[in-house]
Image (cartoon, rainbow, N blue to C red; front, side, top):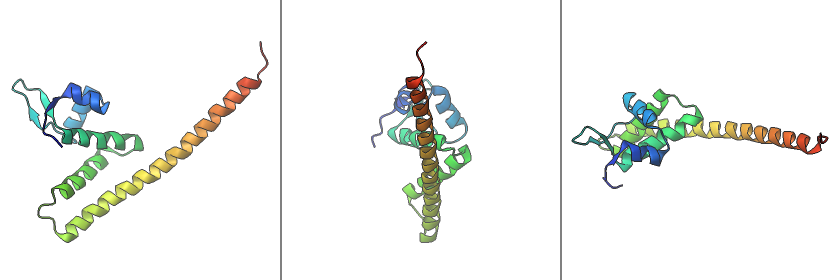
Length: 134
């Protein structure tokens, strides 16, 4: 990833998150700007955007801020890799695997909900199609 810095407005546009949401994630310790401009503006990198995208993808699946923080910690430590023993690495991989499994289960539940919603909408369309003209 490149190390070009972007201001929060560009990051918001790229991630489809509001400025307020990005600042909230900063306040809660989920993401931190990589730098600040001389004027004090938050500056972000592609790595920061990737981190925000993980958060954005976890939110609709019902993960809590603590769970997001835990997953990001595990992936950060795995990505750094420095000084990880085999046992510690395996524990981190298992943590990530558990989140992957939870995400897959939630996606399956959402698919069922979506199918039910589509059936409902189709039922309403059918009723409208067969409704007597007024």
